[in-house]
Image (cartoon, rainbow over all chains, first blue to last red):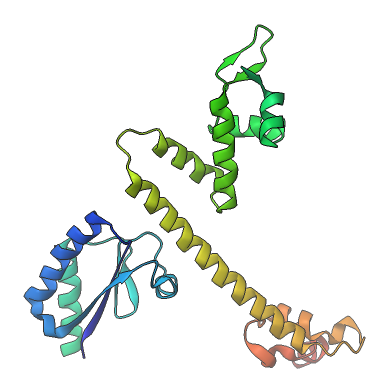
Length: 90
Length: 151
């Protein structure tokens, strides 16, 4: 089963887009087919954002859990995803 | 220059509130008269109008101070203000949902009550609240006395 990654950001946020690109590169490196990456506009998806507890975008949720209230470094995301992939494989 | 009374009149804000805004760092008099009275410029009128409008959008005084500081910061840009507004919207939406959940809990409590004017010992609303079951539905509808006996 694919790992769902929901990236919440405010529309037009240049900084968010830049950070997201670096994080997406991590996902690509680990195998894009293993993940379901969704870019979400926090205002368009406000119900989902509130349900997950997003306070201050950009934020990242993994499998329905707000794991990173603020965007992580690529290294932290890689560690988290590798841990989850290992758990899934076990 | 305007006295505090004149500013209060023009902005429809009480002088007590204006002094409170001053203590909170939101406005400050431009000068003091020889008698020690606060004197303001027209900028104070604009700031108070800003404060009132921001309060209507749900911003706290601390948040309004942040907005005013951003407004006065050369390095700040519209993204900074936008971020504050988006965060406030998320906060308000959370509150709306929390209030909705509270309202639904009250609806369930109200539906439990038969209003048959029996004693408060039989009151299912008080019983549910005491048992901490207000959000769990009809299972909480036991009268207080019945629960007390079974305990």
